[in-house]
Image (cartoon, rainbow over all chains, first blue to last red):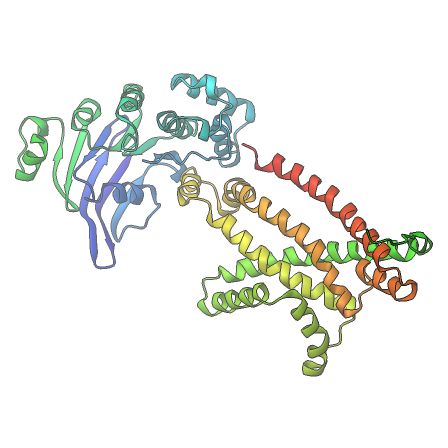
Length: 225
Length: 221
């Protein structure tokens, strides 16, 4: 459902990433692994179309708004309640009926365990709760593909597990996802495919076998951390 | 204690003239709010222009009208414009123009601070779910900007009412000027100024309370 071919991004002269190619089938989870500043976030943004790639192609079988994206710093709309955050886009972008969106939003909130917070504003919630709202907001759009950009990086350690469980449940339900994470243990648990990036280059990619016997020297170093 | 024989009868006899002054003060205020806010929006948008020349031109214009004392601006428009470009404004029009330029310059900066206060992530999240430019402005940017804009803007509204009194200097028949006319014939400055002070307060205090209520309604949450 997603085909990325020879994708490359430069900011002026500076290379952000180069030669990224992969394909993703429905229900697969791809994890992008690598040190900070290796271009993972920009890669996600190029797939979503928030940024223009310098070269290469992204082919997605569907409409752009069917690619959901969750950010490191949540970006939950601060003037809207939790329920309003979930309900606004399906109604004005997808022109869906209010009743149906309402039902779907309730279901999503129940799933992430925030049904009792539906009339709260973001400033009344913890970071972990806001991040769950952001995930639910993507889900009510019925995305075919979900991009998760270091969604646990701005959270306190004790809140990370809740979000990771939410993501694991999504994977079990068959959601197609690309996620960026620093957490190797979590990556291994949830991912089907992996791309290791270093200094903007894809240094190794494949399935879970990379964790047992990495071929690239830098991948080895990275896995030993 | 200084003994002074207070006599308000002259005020009562001329109440119609004073009320007419109050009406003109209200007219000045309403027209200034109307044109001032339009100018403010215009100044704000043009200063945010991507064309360097336009944006620096309007940055300069805002600086000038914010920096000039309003009284100087008013007098300058009244006496200098006619001889410079042959443009002849009535005192009333001159006052509205000067007050509007002043309010426009101040509100442009208020609008700017409001719109700049919105984190880019809020807008990006809206793009991600497929909202178009208009929807992003209408549903995400505007409601959030309003919360930042309203408190300083209401302050500016009240300030505008007070500044209309400067129009008396170019002989606009607003409240202060009507009072001064009355003093010239009645020799009762203490009574007249006292009553005028109260009349300004009668105009300002209810409005200010009303605006506070609106503000509380919009800025909550």
